[in-house]
Length: 168
Image 1: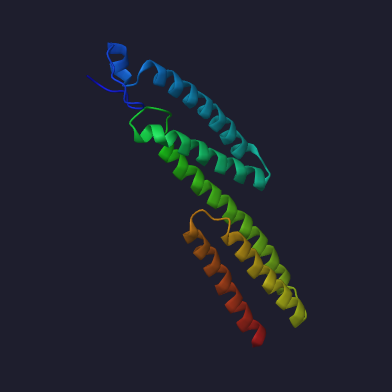
Image 2: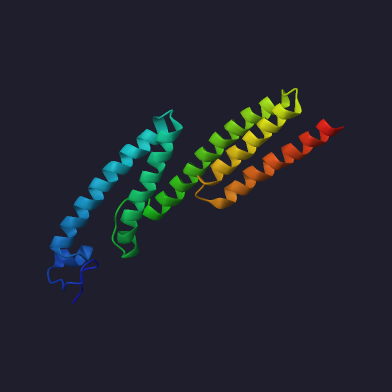
């Protein structure tokens, strides 16, 4: 006799044996998967079409959260959505970090451009500290902390080269 993959109850009918879920669990899983998939589709649309960065970041996180919810079924071998929830998590966590990286690069580039136009050492110090503050603020947003190192290396090399030209 087979057991339900979710609750462990014994299965006795051939229909139940095909999906390996008892009737109660099959209904609950079906409703849960359909509702979660609907929310994920809506979030995916918002991420693809929204122009607001904060909205896109929020919906990327919500997508990952909903995929993590379905991941518990995937771990038990219960079919849910295509692609698998684990693939959704990887895809949207990477997209989240890409959005954060683009946003921070944009802000840092603006601050570095202002620093290059600075005419006094005080203004230069202010703009350089702004760049460093933007990097520090961005560090907290990354899900993958190795992405922060990429940003930090780029900006530090720029500052190093720029400081050399200012002192010469």
